[in-house]
Length: 594
Image 1 (cartoon, rainbow, N blue to C red):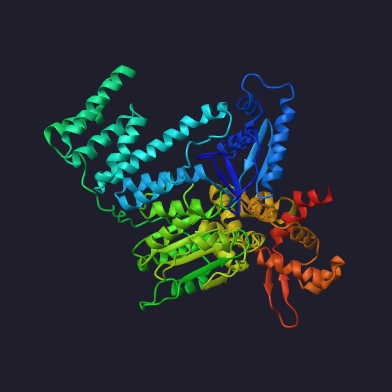
Image 2 (spheres, rainbow, N blue to C red; image 1 turned 90 degrees about the vertical axis):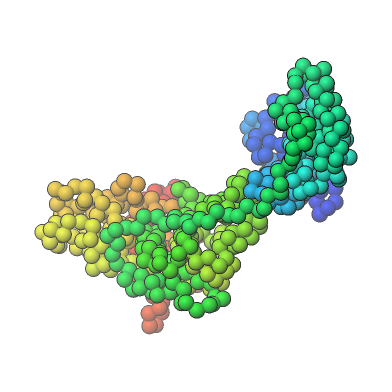
């Protein structure tokens, strides 16, 4: 679907016009489009349609216009009732004034960096979207409210495009256009100054001075003011025979930036020796030219230490990546995914590229990102990836950068991806990790309690970090007291929280992202007597078919919430004891019962 307001208001589907009968229905559509997804109240719609004299049936008539729009625009566009009015969700539709703003912004950014040819292309593309006077078939009330802003944006873009043309030496072609524009906008001083420059550069000094004096007269008569600084400066330059334009600047080079964005390493990082050794071997380039991309995925259940391992491996390989390290968390704090557009803007800025954040073109950002990362020995850490779709635009096109990805879920097909699944730590590994963070004398004084604490962490490095932080903050507290509290399954999860770190919150966020059928199966599995089971034994206990259970178990493995080992005879699945507690005794069990 395509919407146009830079001229007569219209909607087009597959390049064919959608029938919108009457001025008022077009007014409603334009008002919703101009709101950019915000609510347009019934009161505002009433005012834009009828002014201060609405009919007695105003609500019914607005509802009728909305209903007709819904029917005529179809399912691809949603008009939602949201008190006190309506919102329009254009989904993937094209909206001409939004595209105009995007291109005008890109043109201004290119002009600021000295890329005149690119600025010219963007600005001309923006202005070509105009098909006459904007909003030409809506009520005068809407046109009076919105047209001045749109016309000002058009005039500003036109002035900047002319400035680019002057810098590129196109002054002869500009004189007729500027003469017409100055006649249409006699008090726009910048346009008059540009006309003076074009005339002067064509060798018409007298005409340039006459244009100035005519402008001074118009300003005095109509506004009672004298010419501003820009117009006066051009006048003085023409009188003195001095240059009136700067020479065309070369395209500004991107600043030589060596990003260093890695999060802080954990000083007492321990464990994962085999995985760390493998990453140290694979991450650095071999020294031979290769066309194979180096992409590595660390996956595992929530709290398994994926990010900590990735950061440690990256820090141990810094010397192999002299052009810098990029890092980005692909999820917001609430666990929702970040958009590739937002991520690319941040990465490009880290690489020294002056890019704007508001509504940039995604394809253009991807091209620019791949250009800036090509032939650079960068290490790129993409943390908490959601899907292969989110990743597709964030992967460099060249083989020189190495990409290290962490994700809870098993990603779909991503070319050249080397996957490393992180299993839970053993009790011995958890104990070594605990001993590295807590005063060794306390561990030696209560070795059995320390081992129990490590065992209750269920192999999750996040849980070990939390108990280590709690013990470090209570240097006089006994390890036995914490071990006893962790031994109680009803209080264990509550004990595994400290200073913003939380095992239950991490697990609950993962549970909430599951499909309903996968969450239901996990709740049922939490009621089994064993943490390890086959599909056949689980099906027998749950009263389901093996096929039903096996499909769900495989889905939970892909989601990083079940372990898997291909034992002789039949595969065995492992349910982490902390995840069992979270699913079986938390509010998820209560929600299911309700």
